[in-house]
Image (cartoon, rainbow, N blue to C red; front, side, top):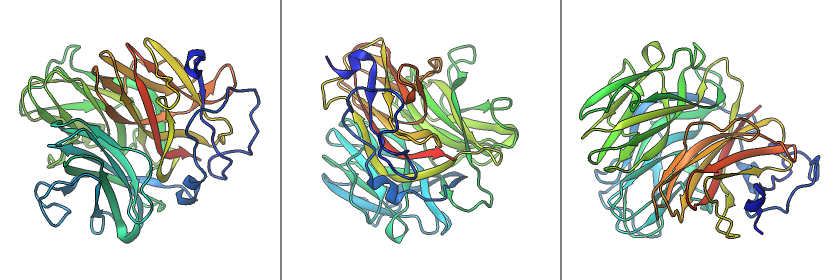
Length: 412
């Protein structure tokens, strides 16, 4: 019987000063470790003092279609990598960036990996998309050698686009720590507001939902029932609408994307729909504020768990806890890319801190046969049976394989 059948999976956290307590410090017996550990190499890249976030109005730093950020207009070939300079885009003291990365016009099913230029390419993915599909995903990446970010395309050719949303710095000037919240729904246009039409903009008010001094929010932005291919742009209310996209939608395909966006006038953000009509859903997962306490520690992406390795895909409706045995108590949330594949039915996946009530929000929407990712800020709770740090995952319907890649953590 696979580990999922018991509802518990263990991903061993290594004994690192930044990440873990001494090995063997668990207070209860646990199942055998599953595939994918938090490898020792991740600590080497972690920023010792932790970092704070500085939000920006979305800025396009890469578009291979128009030679933005690269010297020509050719798509990225199979097995090829490009690099994008952050010089002049963020200050010299920035150590990591938050971007929305999109792929468009791919000639084959493929994945894209984003990492700090100048170090070995990690075994992880940030964006999965099918032939002919346009899809985006949020990415947090360290800035590497020569102040560059690297992007790799696995198969076929594809154009790549990247919009910068902010950066992390060790400086305490005009930067903010983070507060994680259990996901809460703050907008669902299906419940009274109505569809957002072509060229229309709506505002989302976070008053009473975040600290009054909050500078930015992290949200899961989803679009459903789109009548035609379109994109949605999120930006701080009161400022000019940027030339950027936060979410790409295909007709009648429910699609989410994790978005970090600065708060504008009266703690609001604006959402613009480019074409056709679509319903929009916003789930709040955290915010940045001077009064927040969690610092961010970035590192090169590492694969934490992959259900395909042991043929332990998740049925539905069902859930499991991914336990991190030995994790230091100072680690409060992971920034991870969660991808679903081998899906058999329309479904959604929810991620939330173990030991807390399951959120009504969703993090990932999947169609049969689809492979799709979404970045998640996964709060760490406690597994009630083993009294160990854990994150809960729920699949609503059918079968799905889940892959979890971690690129940093929030902690003290």
